[in-house]
Length: 156
Image 1 (cartoon, rainbow, N blue to C red):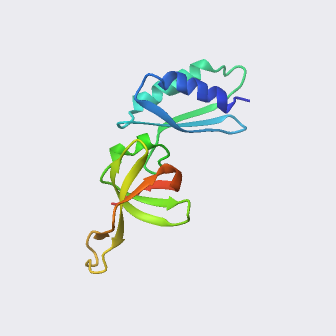
Image 2: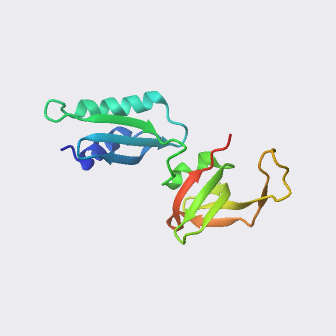
Image 3: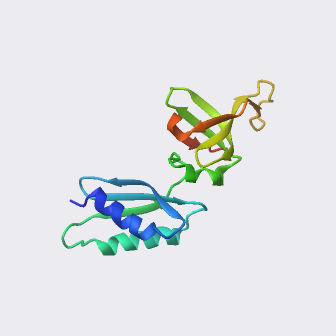
């Protein structure tokens, strides 16, 4: 079986001098390997292909077959690292706090240790059929250890 540790080692080796970093790695018992990468700016398809090739050429399919998928961390994947937040300043997020509280917030600022968010509430006076209007609350400073899950709110 191909180990998660081996894939992690190969991914980190390839990404170490780049602005990209590994967000999530999944390896199943039947050697289905999925890697999700992110960066300080958007990740290109070519960067995913380069990492995929690096890993594929470092493993031996003759010894053990595997399926490999390398993707950018999409909007549906929760943010896990403080480094992921700056490019989303001004965006709305759905936060689940470890206390159980759920918040709709707008990301205002990011520092090395915490994020500053403004809680948003729906405006009861907003007209039906128009874009959602929000009422802003008092800014909150949150460290990532208080956050269970942080997802970008996708609006159309």
